[in-house]
Length: 121
Length: 415
Image 1: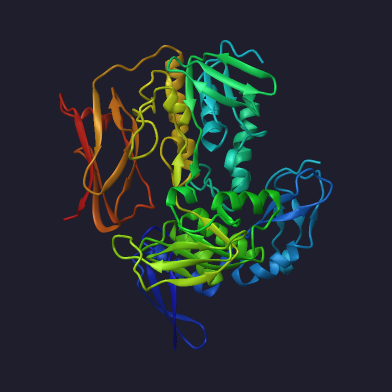
Image 2 (image 1 turned 90 degrees about the vertical axis):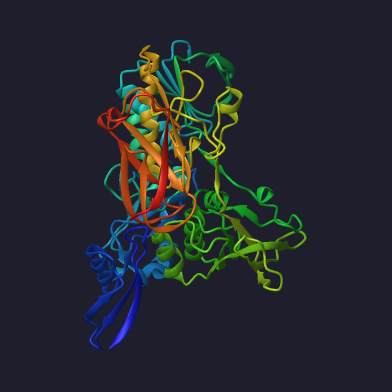
């Protein structure tokens, strides 16, 4: 058995939870959370931490140098840096509307990279 | 553009100003004019490319540009008139507005004004950090614009002073763009921004956080070469002998925001030293009749959603004023009591509803926040970084005994 520490981000309290985890990775016990939702969050955060990535990509043929982008849904936390490397190769070409896909299936996650604002030419 | 006959003029087209202009139109104002010094609507939202906007207002997790677009589209759909690349030079106590742009100088007098100029960042001069004047020292917001809009990386090795949300968000952003953030330095014993940002911006990338520390000196002649960081005592004074040197080429300052009220001051608007913004009633009307204020120009908010909402209140007040509907009634002062740093609005006139914001001075656990005998709520924890919002209904206000001149807003130990 091992222990994991996770801080709940659900509210200003910021409970510091301790998870007892079996060798197979199963969560056996959660202590330190002061609410039910928090317990759910820390278990999920332990099993599969995910984040929405927001960044910019370079443009080509536009008067603005950058296009802000986001992932259409959260991706695994450990892929953030690798995702940035993939973004560095992207060149966004106008015209693009906010919400349009800039890069499909980022790193095989099934998640798309989308523009968060219109790109003028 | 003919500026005579404007009903409501809104100064500033950020999240507050756009919301105010939209609401003024919706509330029945014929001519609404939105004045903005930049070349497009949206204000600071365009450089805030991270998500977390609109969770309350739209029930969706939006980025800054996405949040802006919702309002920009509505501004144009409703026929709000916009004056871009235009600076307001002066607002007189009689609501006379003087503006300048490429077309020259113009003056006009709208029936009502909503101030929505937002706020700006505190700078190194306001902190008085000793040392030379090397290049490489930026406010966090300036660095945010360089990285997110201009496509420039301010440096490779970065120290961030202040753990407000912008500072932590920039720590993550710079790390993702390949810079190395050596440390985030915070003078207080706890983080200045949201816990979510501490976890997702600092912990996720193993960025060191130095609590109860501050930058005591900057080094470098032409360009920044490093900073001295020292531990501070409970009175926030650096403790001699605790200094450490950190090599860096960039120092970002995320050390607080100041409502931008130069125009308000010249208009004769009374300012509250506790907020840095105008004193207002529940409609967000300032001490100058017909001049209203909402968003960060009034007091610095944690969430953009609240900026927009508050500016809508100001717009509703402005439209009523423009139509000649005036609320009379006795004035009741709201006074900050125990562990309350400020309360907005500072006074109530006539009937409710009242949307009230307050901020505490110190972090405390197991507290009850109360607004006189009208409202109370228990909080497991109160923090200076987490604004508290209170809604009082007209019914709540009718419970006030006659002759009350003052209500104390305080934070007390819950029994």
